[in-house]
Every structure is written in C-alpha cells, then in structure tokens.
Length: 128
Image (cartoon, rainbow, N blue to C red):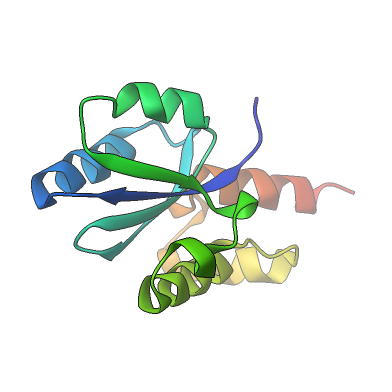
C-alpha cells in the first residue's frame, strides 16, 4: 500500500466542489482517512491516492490540486485559507498514544466507528 498524504483540492465552482467531496466521501476507507471541507471551494483530504490518480479523476473539472507537504502554503494560498489548511493538518495528524485511540473509540461508541487508519494505528499500538 502507498503512503498517506495530505492533498488540498481547490475548485473554481461550487458544483465542482460537490463532485470532489462526493468522490472522497464515497471512496473506500482504505484510500481516504479524513476529509475536511475548509471553504465552499476548498477541501483537504488525507489519502493514499496519488496526484496522478487525482489529476486523472478530476481532469474534466476546473480544480487545482496541491500536495500540502511539498509546498509552502502561505506562498500559494491567501492567508485565511492557509491558516485553515494548517489547522486542519494538525487535526488530521494521528496520535501515537494508545490512550488517545481508546478514548476516541469510547467517544464514538466503539472501535468499529474509528476510521480505517485509526483502527490500523490502534491495532499496531496494541501489539507488544
């Protein structure tokens, strides 16, 4: 399996953003761990999809796709959106503390309510 990456998708039009969000929300859990709609035209996603795969998926839409880890977001985005991206990235970063995942499972009503990535991390942390 590939590597998790944070990707920002910015759409020109609202109907295109709806298609982008729908794509990520309907993707299998193994490929998308988090989706954060930041504004009416920007979504941040933590995914296993590559930039090439997303370019192919959205080739008929007027969207810009950014690999967040590979750019200085303040250079490419306005201050407000850059701040939202940074905040969402901090929220998406997953803890290495097993107690965090146990509390999260309790809050959500069970381990089965964790995302696929959270379940994998909990499983890994619970092994001796």
